[in-house]
Length: 78
Image (cartoon, rainbow, N blue to C red; front, top):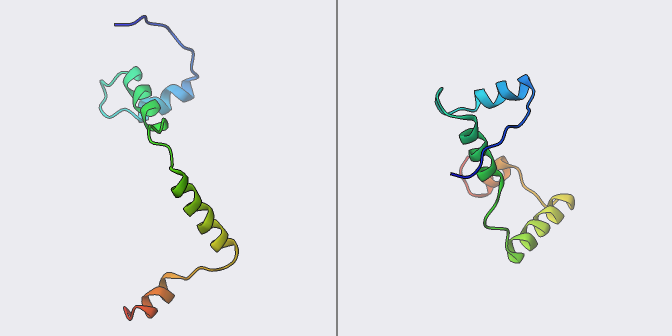
């Protein structure tokens, strides 16, 4: 086991961490580890994905969008 240290958190933050526990006996370290692992993306977006997102944003800004109702009608789902 690696070394252990203490950190200072407000009671509000401690309460928020408590609310995030999967079960009452889960340690705060386990909660924090789960949060950190969720926050770190091991698979960054590819260049192609980024280009696709940029194109989609450009479409939205230019008004090239359809509502769900318009798509359903176009597909004959109404």
